[in-house]
Length: 386
Image 1 (cartoon, rainbow, N blue to C red):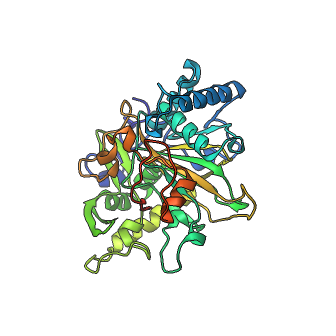
Image 2: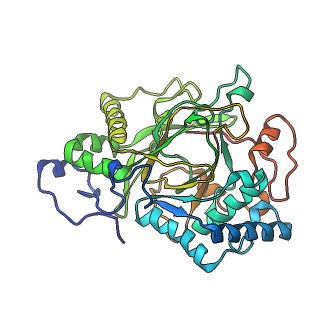
Image 3: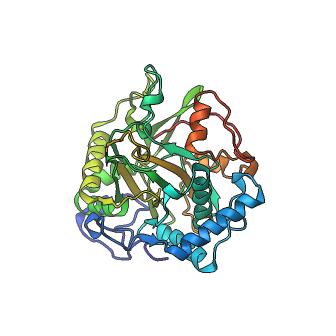
């Protein structure tokens, strides 16, 4: 399989500090440097032409004529041509064996209403991966519609978000940009494989610290937090992968640690500081247009976001939809002790999936029952754990 590990053997002193079971070096298209890409790069863009858009609109009409709930959206109910289906399916190969990210571009959100955009999003992603998390997460600044005494987690504020993966989630992160703000909000990506190699070469002691078990604290609705111990860098069957979200390691205003949580050691504090620096040094800014669907390998590529400013006119507020995915044919084996809600909810039946538009989520948040199609049942408002 391409892009796993190099067979090159290192004989320098650094290699003796690499933890057992971890490779001496990572090679392949996923070990890229930020300067390999920029906002004008076309390599990672799957551009939809007019014929593709016509096929997507025909699939949209076909699904709506079936009268099914949104949970039933898939290749059989959202039919595309063999050629376009193949192009979308190839994105999964790029995610798992290639650079680790891809962008589908060409959709024009202004031509569709909220529900049609959601159906299109679910339809396209169903060709990339055969399993999806059964809840759509709308991402936008909610501070204006939240009570003053309620804390809002970072994804739902207009602030900067540091490099992280979506821990306790799926294998593939997908983000559908409905609209952008008047400034800021840029997405940045960095390859954890590139960071890994730099640690091997320059700071193997930091790498060793990142492969040890760390204390993670995950919040749960109306329950005590769940505590688990797992590393930041793992290696399963020769496949290096990463999970990093500092909120669950050091706590935050929204998700404070319990009183008995021990402070980070000096070794751990330094390791997080080094990770922050190396991510910034090796990242690049992803080109982002309304209508873009960004796909990211959530086990190897970290993402970050700049702060942003929304406008007051329609279509000038940054709004995205987030859906976690898995391609069971290409999915990486993960650590046995890794914790993910995806595993528990991946088999939820189509008529029980919570696939709402932003308008429907807002109606539910304000205590109103949204008017939705079958297969988009009412459920508790999900928390963000980024």
